[in-house]
Length: 409
Image (tube, rainbow, N blue to C red; front, side, top):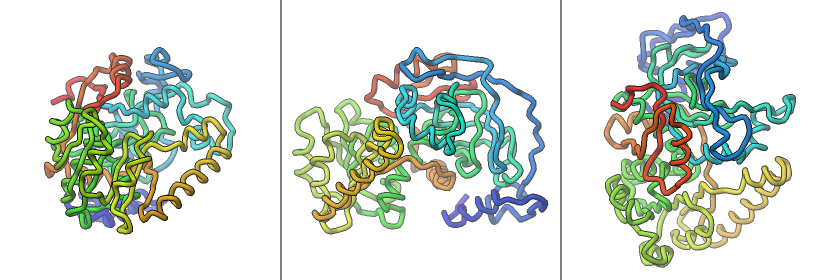
């Protein structure tokens, strides 16, 4: 399955473009590589109205998690959507944040832009941003996928999540799962892959053609995004310096990091300043890090600092959406201008769902360039324990929940 991003994007446009009365009969071999013809109609009727799921009815700590067998069965609302039977769901720090109400103001606007629904209409809310499973139903305009296809996806935070038996995702967010991975292994990759791709490629400007010999610093490299970013940059020929604690050094080196700095042994800033300067820094930690990290970049060479820890959602939660966005704009503009005068670029990175990016990642996984890093597995009945594990922090990979038993092989 060798495809260029442009071809994939074109194929996804062809497969999801609206067509009310004409069935497109194009050879798939030149478009998406699955089946003989683009498929426009679903033939697997769904009659369920409820399903088992873990939900929250209000924001709070771990005790707000509630298991129910009567969660509403997801419905296809747009012709480019698919229903996926969830086999495994990956957990991410954003699930903890969303459980506590972080980003609620902005996500509410995204779900209900006309403010028609009442406050709290997002409940009962299903968490979980990673999914690996099997397509059960396709919208009328979905042609790249069919019922029975094994897929994976990163679910946007404004949608219902994957800690359920079924979930609805857009055809533009989903991708065929790597054949070399089980559902459990596949479920740990999509969200961190989409986040790292957005930060390094969309914001940082890296790609497989320009990454060779560039010096990349990954701050906080042992978590989900960090472990993925190390592998992607190394697959593209870059030089990776990573920061982590001593007990994660073996993991980080095993993933390909060329140089590892232990932040527990002393002043990490001083240790990094002794090294050659960097072309790009990916910051997964935030806080005081940006006070010294930008000084590690090569000045006047297009070097970029990209942080995934931003005040955007905090601003909109505390100030309201309008004032929060205004404050955010002022903050990013002032910081970007301040550092541009010093010859380096200051940027914020955000998660961005992309089936096209996952298509590329799928090829890298099946080629052996990227492997999943599963720290711990839980059963569907152990979701509260999985969240408690996530709360401890200091991740060494990802936490995954097996919705369907027997998917670990």
